[in-house]
Length: 485
Image 1 (cartoon, rainbow, N blue to C red):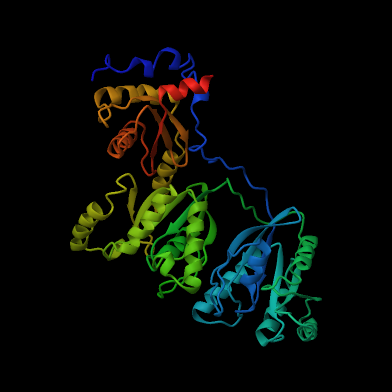
Image 2 (cartoon, rainbow, N blue to C red):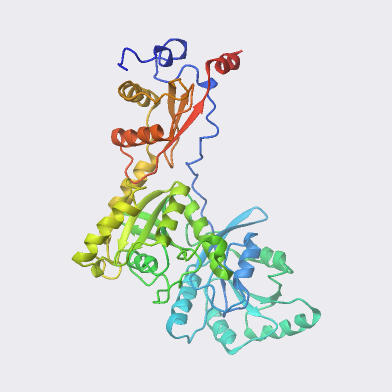
């Protein structure tokens, strides 16, 4: 099929481009199924409320009550929350951020000391602090130590007496005046009792000028994902230049997604450290199940995923399951082979074979070899992320796209289906983030031909690091004629 044989009615006449290069009859083509809202508005500067207290007093349950959904991981086991995690909340029309923290124990050792450090850092950046105490237990030595520290705080501190479900519990809660933090606000986080009154008091005490800015459309949002113990938290700490996240040799140390604003190469990035996905969601149990849901949510709110794979070990089914989740989400992707300092020549040979075999679905993804432990080649991440995000945002003009498509189809026409060769009458990029193209045809295009068009789109317009979606909208001439009437 030569260029002269190309069906002229598809690109000229009454159905052709207007003088400005746009399709003259775009009203005939419904793009609503393909258009996405990729351009988000900047969020206003929001105040921060930190929820603190010793382990297992109901902090995460209270956070879920404040934000109106089960977002923070909750389980009847002390120490489920380990890092500080922030969630947006709205009450009576006012927006703010709620920061959930791990159990705070001033004299803690080991991992618990790291968890307590996260709570302390959350308090330093908060505009208001809520100390949660178990009213059924009363003020413990740990509660008293925490209260002594908070009495020196430079921001408002409210005392929440949790688990007040009866008159007897109310009497027990009255003894918490001894902590010296003012009136105990009697609540039941699990049942919702007193939560509204506490929220009203929080808003009354929040300052007009918050300390930090949480912007939805400012820093590019990067999710660190992968199976447990591949070094996600170590990489976040390396990028942040501090012990931002609890790191331990025990797989699964991170449970909640953890946000961190980091400046790299003069740009601000928002990284989210996520829980390692151990198994399929429907086979996970307890806090592992909810952590997996939080990880998926973090990926959905991100723009790019850094998939961490342990380069010293064989690529596993868990790695590929996480990869599938990223592909389904449509996020830009950079594959990070961590622990490269442990890779010898023999392992490199085997890894090359594994990449060819297991990662054949994503030949477009950039790959970077690093060591989060030693810092080796970590500086290569930013150029890879910038290239992937640039591709994810890229838009091709309608005129340029159709001129290119005309040449491609002239050289390689669609395969015949049912004795009839489909005609591509028009194409447009319906969305970015990820780049989504719609081909309007008078017949179905085979999946193999759509993959061919995707590959040629990448070659021509450059979409390294980003998925590209090619959709087909079949619309025959009779339907188009009826739509004009």
